[in-house]
Amino acid sequence: MITQPAGYLKRIRELCTKYNVLLIADEVATGFGRTGKMFACQHEGVTPDLMAISKGLTGGYMPLAATLTTEEIYKAFLGKYEDFTTFFHGHSYTGNPLGCAVALANLEVFRREKTLMRLLPKIRALARWLEPFIELPHVGDIRQRGLMVGIELVRDKTTKEPYPAGARVGHRVATAARTKGLIIRPIGNVVVLIPPLSTSTEELRRMLELLKDSVENSAIG
Ligand SMILES: *Cc1c(COP(=O)(O)O)cnc(C)c1O
Image 1 (cartoon, rainbow, N blue to C red):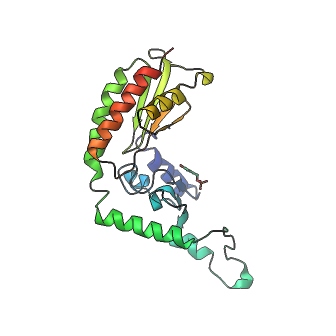
Image 2 (tube, rainbow, N blue to C red):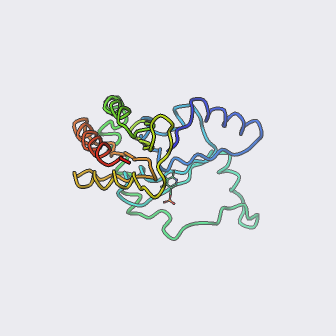
Image 3 (cartoon, rainbow, N blue to C red):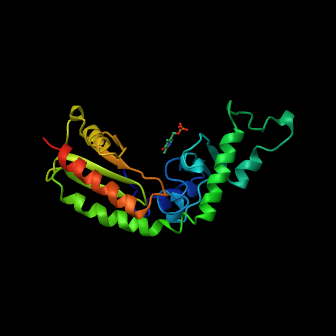
């Protein structure tokens, strides 16, 4: 999990516009509030030409994905049948009614519970509770965007020497966390924390406590 530097996406947008290249944003993971705004692109005021959305669309409870685009691109596919401008491709389960119903219900929960508005204090609390992690012997870097965190574990903190892949240290931390009742998954030597947006501040505090214990006791050698 590598975060983009500030201004990066905005510059990509400018270059895409300048050279007439379509900008596709994959917001499958980052969409629907994950990074603190409805879509991650909004942090930089960027509008992509195409956007892939999925996971958070249904709150993860049913599989559903969508591809969004601009009116301009949409219109390019309109035309008479015999012109073959139509986008004929679909998927076996396109527009699955149950998936769509769950997505609509999830968006209603966003509205009713003011999910986005209530994220900021949680994001700040999470940042505060992550601070002591950097003091831990094998934590090389902490990357947070909203309620999305990657904690990179390294063998040597000063040289940032990585663990050999076979050490499976991320896996060790995740396994230790599970015995404490916290279900997380690593990506290599990065411990990933992506709690549900509905997680309460108190639950977040408890998660971080369990996670800190797990990192302290498993990231060794
Ligand atoms: C999960 C994920 C995907 C995979 O999407 P599928 O529809 O399951 O293939 C793609 N991009 C990102 C950023 C993801 O997090």
